[in-house]
View 1 (cartoon, rainbow, N blue to C red):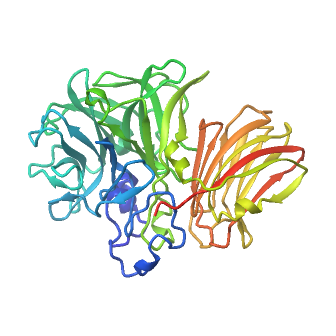
View 2: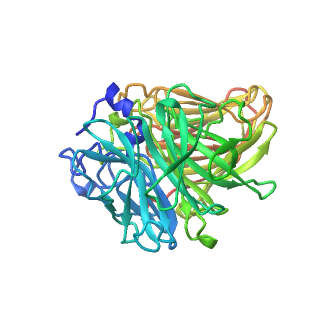
View 3: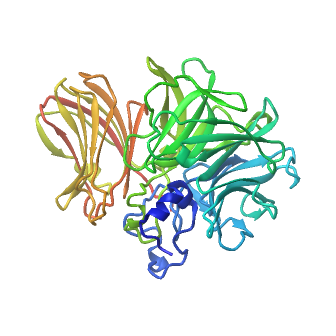
Length: 502
């Protein structure tokens, strides 16, 4: 069924609902397949399923040179850019009146669960539709992760709660244990458990509340990231919060508890845009000693926001995953921060480049060669402006609408305004977001911008700040403009049209 926005659905939690198949895979409203992948608003170099809802990225693993991702329908890729959809429902044998919510996948290299050496095991939240209870369940795969068989002795972890969900399981090599991080959503806590066999779990600690603890915590992820300056690895605990965005903590993990470096610090957010949630990293089971971590840490997020997700005007289904991003950590005076960098494989989609190197007087100036790319492009731009200038780009321009991205050199803030960008009326969609990307008075900044039909992803200052948003601009809103309020603004820009992956 197609859900309406109501307190019951919201109480289940965004992460949980996003992995539930809320929309039929063969809806009567779907257009004929001759239009498949050409429907209005469908991104052309982001993964979207043929015909269904797609929510939280679940079970992200790299194995045998392939990347696998679920929602809980499966998809696979060899380069993180071109995807093959495997199915709509990967977990088989689910009991009546139950649903599989968000979770993760591991490779049981030692046959600890008894389903065979190197069996793939999905660990996910089992939702009971009558009681609304959320518990943790497992399923195993003997076909390289294409399908999973529901374990007949599920659940494997049950605290009789309606707010207990979204497990991430990793292998913690120093102790030889499986470790689960799972959200106690309305308590704003992440609970840690350990296991020898993926079937029997022992509680070890709770983390939280901490940082942003206003409403809810969901979708915890736990992983190691390399520090750029030293090459050491630090643990990162990431949680989705308030059904709206993500925060993270950098610290240490000993297999039982997470200890943040700066427990009293202000919240640190993953993305400063309007539409990024429920991300997870790929566990790399191809790295030495079958360790699920490695220097290349890749993440995917869900590009949407619960306030208007069910109202999306897309015809193929609903939901988009972000472009894949590398994580690294860098030092700042306030502590370590995540840097996000688009994966290099995206460069294979670039067409013929367009270069602009020019100084502009005050005003707004069309960029026709980029407009001709029809909202399917990448921009790399360096701006050099006066210390009191406001300059930037208008995108998706047309029919009296646009998305405005402006940098205020006097404050160091980047502002994203989409209050008038969509050609359909979507409740709660008209929003503005801000991100401080530089110190006040900074004149020189760098931007990398990916526009793909209904999505925009902006990486500022080499990925130190990221802003992700949906647009739902009409097909005629193709224009791109550069503007400067004070003039004498120097723009050094390279743009590429991006090929479709379909």
